[in-house]
Length: 361
Image 1 (cartoon, rainbow, N blue to C red):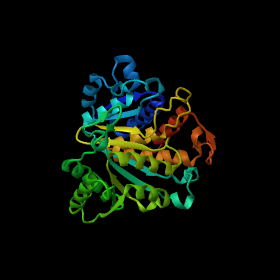
Image 2 (tube, helix red, strand yellow; image 1 turned 90 degrees about the horizontal axis):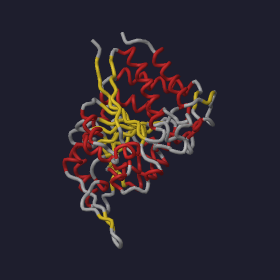
Image 3 (cartoon, rainbow, N blue to C red; image 1 turned 180 degrees about the vertical axis):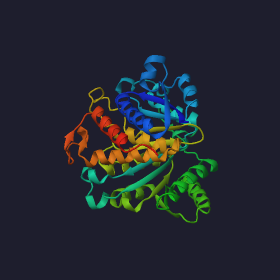
Image 4 (tube, rainbow, N blue to C red; image 1 turned 135 degrees about the vertical axis):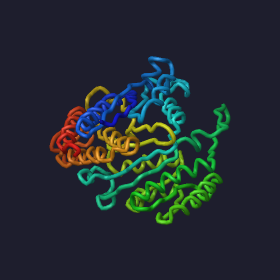
């Protein structure tokens, strides 16, 4: 009897619906051959939710997500909603969903495909072979700390971390490192911030349970420089919320396009899998968006949420094959392209490759 999974679908705004549709196409092609079934439940979040319900994250969506095994998410936001009060902006809905689902760990891989090594603004010898996993704490730190205030003459936010928050995210990083090259670099600002000193001391304590993993420490300003100078020195980067937000975006550009890379937000409840790019409202509806990051996010969902490792490997292999064959969306058209494809065509190509990769025996 086939394995059954319930997947929440949040397409969101801008190009979100376009890229999510292509990921679903690939998942459907794959599941038909791999002995499992996916049942989808579409939900609202973001600007489209504001327009339809008056809030960026309706209660119905929260309750729907709780019924699911995982969530595949597109993108939210756009200039249409930029002037709303902060709690009504689309981004507030995503923060609230992450908090309500306990997704404290954000996994952001940054890898450079050999076929696109020239797409990076850095020299080939610097970026070829880069394969980094940024593990970012997602529900604590400066973004969620209290008290906070926006005044006329003074504004402030508070960076707060508890022992439990640091321990659990550190364990995630070390467990991932055990399956990779067994190296963790913890990034902080312990020379000036007490909360970073606290972070570092606890990470050192957690490291004692993983004697096979090499632990190093780096200040965030130096880490930012080192990502550009010598990115291959990193395996797993462990860091807090605001530092992780900045570093993961910097790391993503090593690949040459923000349209290539996925992410996973995991924790104690339901994981959220999404591309790292935004809603790109300027190209929405034109059929030119790059769906590879969302299709890769679907692969991460299969791997980390559903335990369908072979299926995830097939998606990853299909993406690499499409790139090796020279299929590119317009954002990558200048890099060894043999054919410029639409968003839908790329989805068709990858779905076709996963179908031809053979049925599970």
